[in-house]
Length: 585
Image 1 (tube, rainbow, N blue to C red):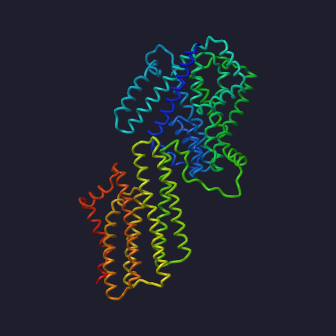
Image 2: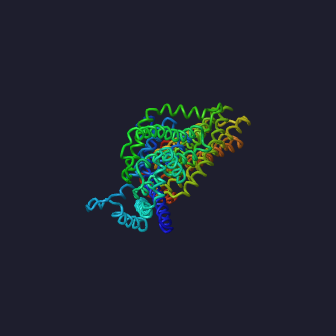
Image 3: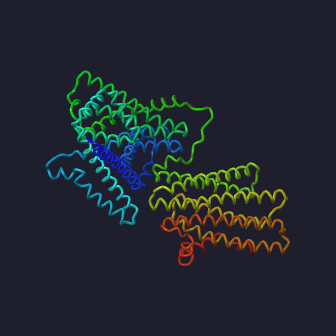
């Protein structure tokens, strides 16, 4: 084996790792909403958590990525530690899928049908389709499909290049002697762990082992301990990702490490005893890519079978290693670890935005209640909710900007842009809650009161504003079509109410029923309520834009007002519901 073979092997390894990375990321983008839905339905059931971890890892082709994602979920409070354990165990089995795919490169047969199953026979066609989809399609899903095919073709080409480059090693005595060292199972475990820790992917290290096995110099006796060690090495990624996380998140990463160490130690002892006592001929036989895939799967299934019933023990063990502090930890709402799977990070952003909306609207309702039922305690709650809403906007805004900079598909990008817009509106709603509170406190300090007719009108406006807040919240959280298209008609009616109430106030001033000082507070309240309805209209408009795949809110609203008969009917219904005619009589 000369220097050119070494360079070819390095090039093949680089293509192999690059293809695996491209394919995994494209698979995650292509799965998109399905992956988000699957992860959103996690429960405490062991079987469901296990299956979820298995499926997600099989989709994104990386148990390390799945585990890092789980650490992020635990750190954000989305998953309990007990749930995370089951998902991590499923991820260990799901990662074996890659080895089975790579084993196809070792197919040897003169049969035409069998030859067609060999990747070198069909990857050129997949690569061609991938190039066509990637370069000429405008559809994001087709582009991602193209990247999956290109990633797979690159991965298999790299695998074949590595195998061809190392084929000369079968005639090198030193290479055979090296793998004879690994027949010592403990050395094999250490070698597998170090290799995987360096490249941070057990799937990739199994692929490298399969390529080396093509020389015929790697026995099962050497390959099996290396496979066992790879399971320990893959924990490095999750352990690094848990640095600076909450205790529960660190425990989740530690569960991954403990699971693999305990499983490896237990089955390594069994393997060593079997080899020592029975000396099976299979362990001295040359390993194949297919055989390594089988061994990899059997080992991971056996580890899971051994430790899945012991999930409670693992939880207690890591809680003992990482004990609780007396001071409770603050759960981080948004975790950067979720950027590894942008669609999941976007789903988390949406949930936090809903929490922000509930906080802002809750504070606004409290402020409206304070008009007639003011207490210092209520005032403190309103200001605390406004502060919390500001915090939400700062955290969400920064997180969404960073998320938008990642490579995400068009629909995810549009949703991120929509969230960035609406969180600004929710923050302004909380500002108006404090403005309303200040107006109420000003009246109390000056000993001012509204007249009876003014109170009645204000109650009508407050009821209308409460309804538009309900509609905006339903539009944002549920995507309710009726709510979305009811916000703008009610916003117009609230504008009419404001103008009518201003006119009535001037009449009361002329008749001496009201003072100018009270009039200033009245005007401030009306302005704040009108602006609240404007922000609700903006929120509904953003949802309309998202559904129309066009961020041109003002144009959509203009078309809605001018051409839609249903819109005009809704306006009339709201005018009748919140009419001031009876008050004028």
